[in-house]
Length: 255
Image 1: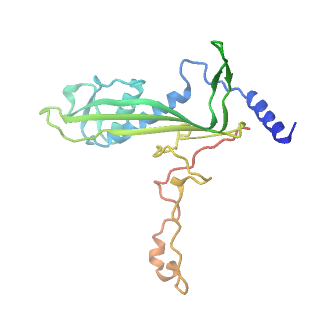
Image 2: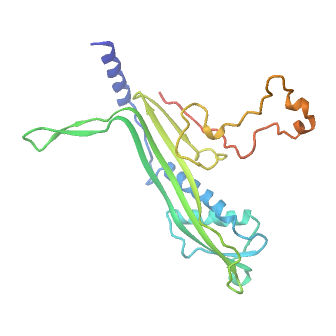
Image 3: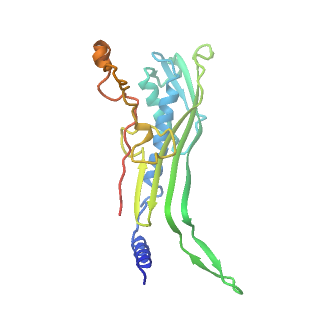
């Protein structure tokens, strides 16, 4: 047996020995985390359109979605965090907020470099031979998407006090496999401080494209350093990264 064939057999053997138990309940934790993370991010975005400092009554009669109770609770919590007060009696409210859901679900897709599982028909029979999947590289994507909207109007006059637009929230988990036995994942749902995913693509190198910070301008030949030339301006330069830079994603390698 050639060396290449031996390596291929070893890879297939190792891959066949890997088993992952997804869940012992009716729904996986990953599914629930994708939905709740997307809902919380959409809730935070949509609550920004609710005027603060007023007694607010929330109506959720038209809110229908998977895990709707959790999403409604997230919107109520976000409204509170923005400075509006919630009341349980509509008669005590100064403004009414009606909330609705345009989407709350998960999109799945996968990309493979290799051959998917297929069936090779056997002539003169109704059966066939199943050919297993052979993936030199595979990416499985799970994207949680939430779209929430609301109407805000005066409790006495019924006139709109804000003109909010629908807001979106995203959460993602990508799984990768290479050379049959090497796998890793990128996500923003397991760490509490993870920021919302703005893109489905991963940077082609080890550095996340969204975490890159532009380097300070360098002086040209014979030009003095900016900090020396303008010391007062240099004092205003923050010593740390800006707060809107997303934190690095967790990455695990599973041989």
